[in-house]
Image (cartoon, rainbow, N blue to C red):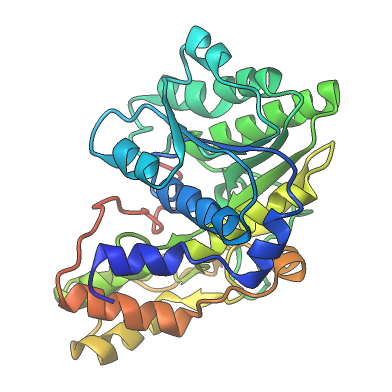
Length: 338
């Protein structure tokens, strides 16, 4: 896989299970925050699924669309777009009321020094959206960062593990969850909170960052010695199918791959593929940010794309100079400073 066209075609090909479930999701679907790293392929995945079964369902993507040609790209596929700043109350209220909302908008990077904006996006806005779309089904993206670091000898934090977010970004994400939960109780709005970490694309993600470090001969910090990952296409598919599992109070669902992966092992595997030497610094700590997604796997099945397949594709992408987003995950961060 060497081109963005090939990559996006692969990521947006719906599975038979998604095609089956899309027919059970009543009404139109609106994606709030479609302009992020996952939103464009999510919108295209849904559109291809509904086209496959030839049902009448609007897909609407909402974003600021402040740069690039994404809006034209989505509309060319038959996906409707609306350009708004969701923090603008009049613009928010002007959005159409639809039966299904996938809520992806939020802020992470640049939180340090701009904490007020992060809290506005991640904790204030969710309450406004929940009131606006009180009669909708809502799948709201959150993060595994709401959990504390946990022993690498366990299977990670499950949905009933106590939350204890570190840093203002993670705290504001818990704020988002609390606001949504309040309005779910108040209005009986069916919701699902989608605690994701970490999605993988060839253009960004934990695996790409480690692969690039190996390829360039840079030392890999082992302090955060273990991670969870999931292919972006699988995470997107889970998000759409989650519309059938909303409830009030909200369903909480961890989303990631089934493995607890060693950063040292990942780097060593890339070194083999790239014919380089893996260089390490520091040592693995006893705790890491780990997420147990066995409930999601029970609902939706295991991810279609395996870790080994992801590493094969990423290694080829790196060697051939594939385009990247230059948006590091900062997965090594242990103090929550983003």
